[in-house]
View (cartoon, rainbow, N blue to C red):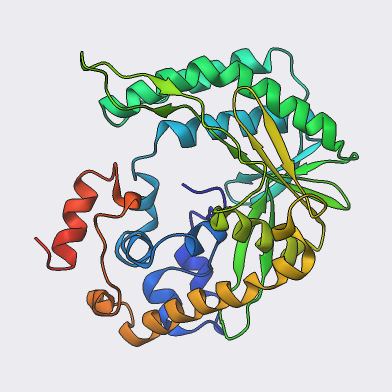
Length: 316
């Protein structure tokens, strides 16, 4: 599940208690947008949020890169965070003090090893990630020390943003923040090279571009958190041998006037999806208004779900 997907076991009961929301909110059990949803292609978004239930989404296959990124982020929160917002059954998201522990990396390795790869390629990627884990954690510590957030530092706080022409808010959770700054963390893991003549594969380190060009999806996420908090943005990108901290001072895209422009793109995507939900009112006929591109890399690793989607769109 994405970090910015609301965790509510009694979601339907909660939605039904809000009379002001439009009827299609109850029909699709979808009460908000999120940065990760906005960044998904329409067909993937429709399949996950209009076709699958919340319980089914939780069972979607993950991948080792995502798991490894979560482990690194969790390490950062344990060492540097003072408070973390966590879900507690019956109470929702509550603010908890981070208990300082020893041997947090050893505990993270145990959690890392519990991951079950979805296929052979994912298994090989997971093994490659394990070789990078300690070095990547070292780079994150260097980056966070360099930024120097001031205590108290909060992690995973939910923030929201109302978009023009949209009925639902956008909700997301901040990786790290202090009173005046926030951090959005991205990890880069080794990339599989083309197979050698003997059929074996090797992995190479993904370089971090000093000029953050061609990563509009990441900038959109930063824009959301900036617009929701009005704090100074820090986009931290790390791999196993380097880190780069993008700020308004060294990245043109992160200047306030450029981040402000993303509100229009977010609004266009979300308002169009709301119109689709309103038009089809809980029915699967929404596929008539969304073009499926099952060759897109988003569908890679989706297994049987790609087959189900093909049938849903009448392509199989």
